[in-house]
Length: 170
Length: 170
Ligand SMILES: [Zn+2]
Ligand SMILES: [Zn+2]
Image 1: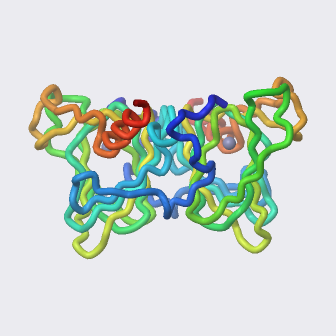
Image 2: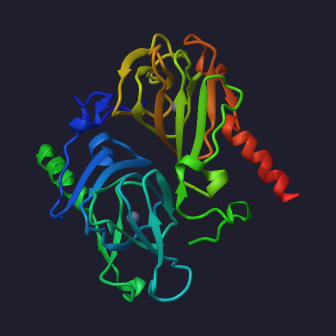
């Protein structure tokens, strides 16, 4: 195998998920943990996250050209998703109920948003994406044209890591 | 998004993992379920499996050029892994204890084998691979030369699906 990046040296091969750092990255009600990541662990083709959304919190409306698979570990909520096949903006999204032990994937470039719509319980999901680190285009609402969605790169949790990596390289 | 394959039409976007078919694919003690797959669900860049190994059972010694991330949901066991950087055959593998709520990834092309070495409990893992469907090279033992490892493609669980797809296409 290729030799590890300097930044990843010292991380054990088998890691205890309970000991992986988590943070809300400035988004109240979010807990994000990178279980296996491109910047932290040298992953090149897949990245795995563990995320918890407190009641009433949600992702932005967004799209990305990578594949994304969700597994709902705990709680429930709503997936809003709009196919990008037609039209200049996402438009009215489909609503799908998500529930414990359910799984779904987001077709490439479809605008989507995940909500914890259960006011009594956290929503915990395991997420896998391809082609890390993720490049996310954010929509303020469902009528924003695809061409006006704003690129956020690096994304929230990759920002901090990128800065740390840069500092380490000084 | 691209239109779904004919074979995937009719599958709901959000699926109950408890209702996904599982099988041992001729390997006693194994339970394999494709949570999100290339053949079943049209995934192109990632695939997610849920696998259970009964006590004493294991994967073959094998390598693949895709990335693979494991999350141990239940049980414990041993990961054997040999770096392929040097030498003509895997040689003596490193042993790593794996435990509930642990995670690890397999560097590309490293020969590896997962054992449920806990005689009292099933080992349940969630697995993500890149570049599906997986192309696996199998070693009878750790001294088989890399060049003599045998390609098994399609792999156990993709074989049946491929046949079903072919039948559907007639
Ligand atoms: Zn997304
Ligand atoms: Zn493997």
